[in-house]
Amino acid sequence: NSEVMTKKYSRDFLLKFAEQFTELPEGFQVIPETAEAFVVSNIGTPRDPY
Amino acid sequence: GSSLTSVPKTLAAKHPLEHSWTFWFDNPSAKNKQAAWGSSIRPIYTFSTVEDFWSIYNNIHHPSKLAVGADFHCFKNKIEPKWEDPVCANGGKWTVNFPRGKSDTSWLYTLLAMIGEQFDYGDEICGAVVNVRARQDKISIWTKNAANETAQVSIGKQWKDFLDYNEQIGFIFHEDAKKHDRAAKNKYTA
Image (cartoon, rainbow over all chains, first blue to last red; front, side):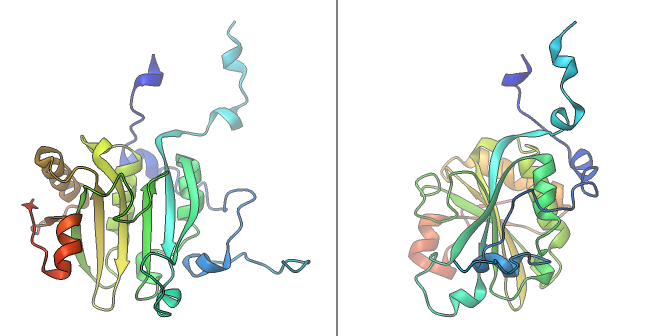
């Protein structure tokens, strides 16, 4: 049963995915408090005020 | 035939991690307002697949690009990167120092070793943090049971191997750090 085994991934294996996933996860929103952690802030300007 | 083989490739392709992990960021400008310690830490995102890890990692600053004073954490989901967290309370940390701006590769390798479950005592690990300071970058791995010397020493040795780091590193109990701040002494070395 593979479900009881630890999901191990080597560094080389993980690095293979680095170039393929460059977009922020779908629906992800940056909040102002953490905006400076991001390379490109997509806080944007909401149409409606909070 | 088995219906499992007909799962669309886009759905089947995500690689689940053993644990969910949360990135946390501590905002240096908020810290300057002398807010209570820890009150400016904010969770950024929780991921549980290899793909989602990269989606976030590729869009956040690496330590060399963060402002002085920033702290970036990656902790197992539900564990807060604070001494007060019940899972961390009896723990401690290994710390590796780098000249300012030279920790990017080691930070990534630390994250990959954790999420890829490369540590023999991975269950002991709470998470990792990089502290960006004026003179140096510090990366620490936080663990759960500081008194478990076998586990801590194993983690310290393996971590040095993963980072190809040759200098001695030290393990400090959170309890000692609380009492003695910077004067806290290493309980273990690797």
